[in-house]
Image 1 (tube, rainbow, N blue to C red):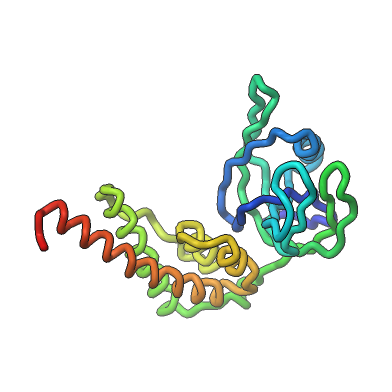
Image 2 (image 1 turned 180 degrees about the vertical axis):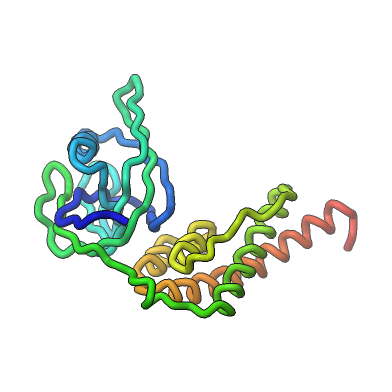
Length: 217
């Protein structure tokens, strides 16, 4: 997790970044090039926040108050003076006050800690969540025709609570809602509701694929 951060440059996007999630990002606007340079010269961290209203490119944008601190893991400059970044979500933050919006948004923020004790989930619930997630991954791999071993699922409930939503086919407000949930137990429970619905849909698609492949009615 990060050290204490008081202010953070905010990058408004039409996407939600979760803690422990990686994301590519292309930088081409001058204001965000300056943000990148300033950040790399300071602590290599920026805030990713979902746009509530406004535009991602050009004009101003209003964001949700809760976003994710992102660490810049790599930055590559192109011949056309654009930048391609790889970001990694670190932890959640709450915007308490906008300090400046020129040339880019800078805000005072409060890091939202998620104490492990408050995220307690018993072993039975954790095992059920892991099994459901593994089944979901298996369905995804089978639909894509990739018959291989399911990748390991973390035992840490906090990491698991952020990993499940990364693979779900969620609308942006739904993913933002999961980000804002305060505890991993509640986040896992909410994610499993979405996951159960998607497993039903994937099961139907897989059955249809198998019937078509083997000529069954």
